[in-house]
View 1 (cartoon, rainbow, N blue to C red):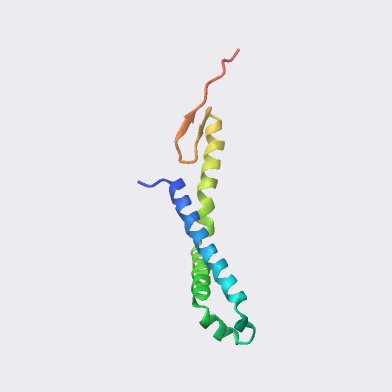
View 2 (tube, rainbow, N blue to C red):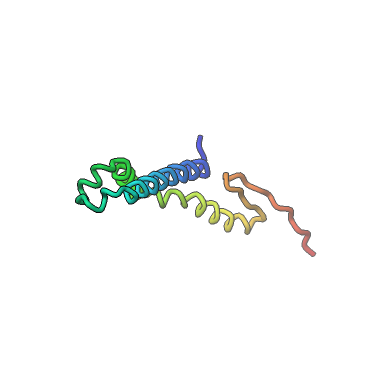
Length: 105
């Protein structure tokens, strides 16, 4: 069974890889001297790596990957707030941490 922190980490990697691909493709596209002399459609057709990676990044955002990446940290922070009332906490993987009780007078 996969926990939320692992899924968030995997989605971070996917989003980072897609962003790096778009950045590299944009750099290649903009550094090409023929880009300024061609129409936008022909220029994008010549730089298929940038075109495909940009479409993939837009598709990932439409699927809501940006929400899923931060969902695990939001869930963990809310759990910590609730668990604080019971002298407990949790780590990023969801394991409960018992805090020492202070003696009451």
